Amino acid sequence: DTEVTQTPKHLVMGMTNKKSLKCEQHMGHRAMYWYKQKAKKPPELMFVYSYEKLSINESVPSRFSPECPNSSLLNLHLHALQPEDSALYLCASSQVTGHGYEQYFGPGTRLTVT
Amino acid sequence: GENVEQHPSTLSVQEGDSAVIKCTYSDSASNYFPWYKQELGKRPQLIIDIRSNVGEKKDQRIAVTLNKTAKHFSLHITETQPEDSAVYFCAARKETNAGKSTFGDGTTLTVKP
Image 1: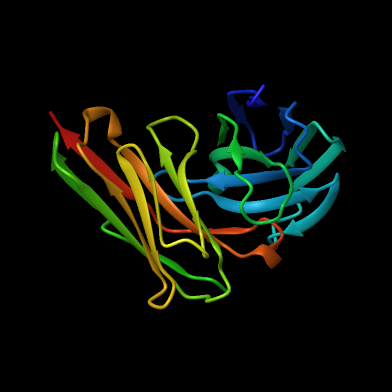
Image 2: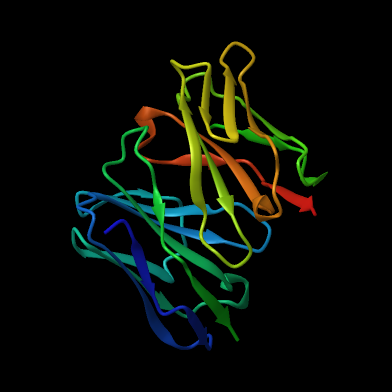
């Protein structure tokens, strides 16, 4: 299984809602990532988990809260988002965070904040 | 920090022609350079990568070249096909950066049949 899965595919939420994005991989990878991608722009790194511990937080606002319950799962909890947070949220995984290990991307969750 | 510049931002070629996309990076410590293809509405997918101890790598119609001295690397696609139409992103990463890649802004390649 060389796939990263993400749910839901689409999400529309109001600015007062709380929702969560989910990501799962069964490749035995120990590094997992959250990216945000706006239209026609490259992915922007948000968080990196290495061996279930948060290793990078790219100064992401606290309304985004990541969680890594185990080595296969990665969640992104959303609360009090703004319309400018509307984007494609991509999860990725790699064997470890060292260089040279391919990052496998999930299909993404397209988030719209109204 | 690392800065990656990618050119051109858009590229249109006739089917069967070659396409070249160029990237430059600023941090000489970067040592891993992947290229991703992202079709409309789909996930980025790695198509080829190169490490700093190698000058060129080929995979069928795709090749990447790296010039460490000049700090630039290029993607070459030969015999282009309409299904090559997509956005292509280059990236640079260094081993000490805990998995963080710096991406170029992307090149939209259109292959006309």
